[in-house]
Length: 367
Image: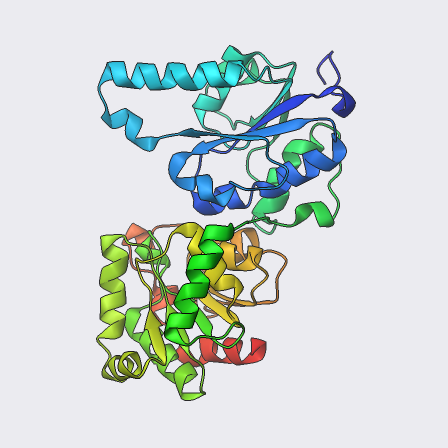
C-alpha cells in the first residue's frame, strides 16, 4: 500500500487511458460512471486512439476527450514529435491528480511519469517483463488478467477496487451515446426504406478478425429463414475490404438477391459511421452478430442480442447486461482457445461447423 493513501474526496481531475480497440474502449465506460459517482467533485478525461473515440465521446460524465492518431507513426519523425508534444502539453495543462491506465500499453507508464499525478493505477505485469520500470511508474495495481469466467467490465472495474472504491450494479452499465446527427440520419434511412422501430432484425456478421466470423453461406441461410418468418433484415458491416467481400458472398445467395429487390432485406454495409450504427441497432427488435464491437454496441443500446462465439471467450467478452443468447459449439472442447483459428490457421472449426438451426433457435427464443 502506498504511503499516500488514495482519497476520492481529494481528486479534482482524473485521466482514464484505454489504448485498445473499439469494443475494449466501450467496455471501459463503466469506470468513468463509477468514478463520477464515488468522486463527485472530480472532472474525468479520457485518452483513446482517434478511431475509437466514438465509443466514448458524448459520455455524460466525460469532461474532455484526448486522442492519439494511429497515423502519427506513419508521418516524419518531426511531425510525430510535434504531435506528441501537443498532446503532452494538453494533458499537462489539466494537472491530473489521478491516472487510471486500463491496459499494459507502455505509453501509459511513460505518460504517468511525465504527468506526475498524486495517484495512479495500472495492471500488474506478469513475470519476465520489465516490472521494475512499470512498478515504479504507478502507485496502485490490479490483476492484469482476470479469470476467464469473469467479464471484461469487471476486470476494468478492478482498477477502482484497487483504490478502495466499490462499484454498484447501476455503475456497471455500458454507456454509448449516438448523438443527434446520427439519430437523424438513421431516422431518414428508416423512412426511406420503410422500416419501423422494433420491427426489423439487425445482422452484423463481420469482424476485422475473420476467424471470429460464422461462414457466409450460413449467414445467408439464417437471413432466409428469418425473412421467411416475415422479419425485415438490415445487414451491416464496416467499410473494410475483407468485410465487404464477405457481405458480397452472403448476397450472392439467389434468395437474398430477391429479398434485396423486394426490400425485405436492406444492405447498409459500409455506409454507416459508428455512431449511426449505434442509432440503427437501438431501433432493432433483435441484433445478431459475432464477437465484435457492434455486438457490444447492441448490448449497450439494450437491444436483445444473439452473439455467435468461436475461439474467443464468451464469459469474458459476451453481451453485457442485456437480454441475450450466446451460441457456441458444444462439439469442440478446445474452445475458447483464444487463438486466431485452429492452430492459428485463421479458420475456426468451432464456427465452420456451427449449425444454422442452433442460431435460428436462439433468435426465436428472443423474438
